[in-house]
Length: 401
Ligand code: ACO
Image (cartoon, rainbow, N blue to C red; front, top):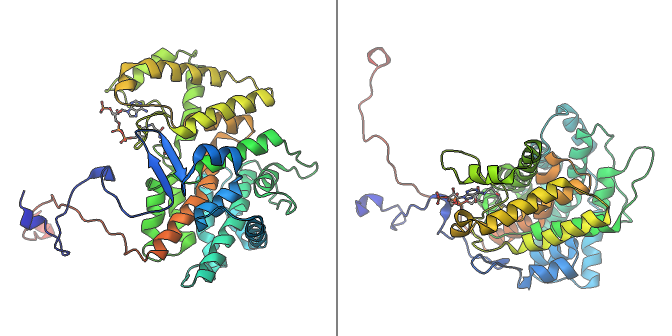
């Protein structure tokens, strides 16, 4: 390698690391992850403690501001969010323009971007106060967009929730309340959703979070950065995996429930099929979130009296994978998405909304990472490359090509 040719304008050497498997993009004080040992902590607190003892809004505050809130701080935070929980009426017209078949992730990403037009003050956030205002605006309006994406899909009228409810309760209300009758909140469902959102709230420099940071590094604004993050999350190798897992489990059920056949497909290098919900870029051990979710799935299904054959197929696949040398050698364990879809399904959330629910949970993490990036005055993200194309060529006129 000609090191001189690789030398960039900064005087350094350009390294090639496809997928950034060994390249850190920033220093961060938000989430600690040890993939070898299966440890996940937000701001130093274990994910197990937070999932058990905190609620989603407390965790959002912790991620964004660095400390667990006092009761007064939490009350003020929620009051500020609630004051921003209405969306401009014209956003409904934009939503009207989408076909009913539109994927809710596309709808969510577009509407989040559209919010910029109605909230231009959220773009230039030079002071802490401006930044705070943009953050509570987004935390207030985002759940409305999530609920509307579902209601649009279900052909239901767009509406708001009930400000007397907690943040997560209100989300369920907005999603499911019927025009005529009211939606009865089930504490098991509220608790399970709260837990799921906490478990998804941050995961350091994953694909969507890195997207949020890199888009934000151009000072494009919070809403634009989050909209880009939503698009990144949509892919089946990232957040879209929860939808892909359920579709895979359904397909196995339809095909007679032969898990061994699908295990063989997953191991066949000629077959593009992968066991969705298995493997993780960073965890080379059990994903600690998967353990918590697996327990929650059992609780929700038994509390709601749901008997889901899909769960049996999931358990069968997990058992086989944990004993199979292909999966053991490559350290492919079930990830967070393997069980989350089963819970969402039991809650009555359609498969196409699963990744939207992931985005809802990830929102505080994206915000915290964006805020940290701005506070640290990080430079614009601009990776280098090693050029492997043609060397200099003489132009050939079109008549001679
Ligand atoms: N099924 C079968 N084989 C797999 C799987 C799988 N789910 N995951 C990885 N492998 C194999 C690969 O074929 C490769 O085998 P090889 O060494 O013989 O070539 C080896 O394991 C390593 O896989 P990579 O793709 O190199 O690992 P990487 O870290 O790049 O990818 C990823 C991680 C994308 C999560 C991958 O495991 C995968 O595609 N899993 C299924 C999709 C999924 O569940 N995504 C959700 C991730 S969690 C999240 O985003 C919240």
